[in-house]
Image (cartoon, rainbow, N blue to C red; front, top):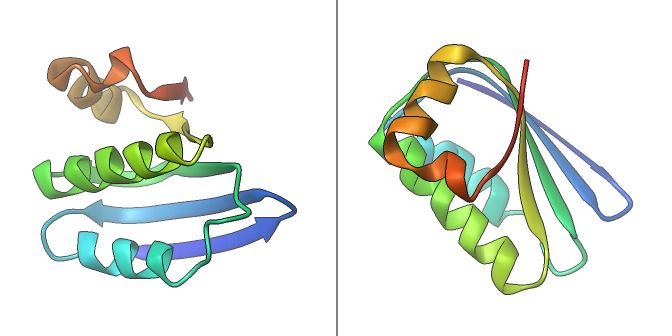
Length: 102
C-alpha cells in the first residue's frame, strides 16, 4: 500500500492506494501517529485508489474516527468506490462516518 500525506493548515490529507489489511494497517497507523494531531481539525482520507479494506482496516478507520471526534475534529472519507462503500454499509459504519462517494 502507498500512503501519501499532506498537511494544509488544520487539515491532514491522506491518500491511500492498494490494500488496507492486516499487513498494511500498522503502516497507516504509524504514519498517522507520527503526526501531531493536536492542531488538526479534520483528516481527509482519500480512498480513490484503495482496492480492498479488511476488518483490520475498518478497525483503524474506526479508531481514527473516535480519536478525532474525542478532540472535537472529524474524519472524512472521500472518493469511496462502490465496493468499499458496500463494506461500510454492511458494517453499519456508513451510518456515522462522513463519506463522499466517487
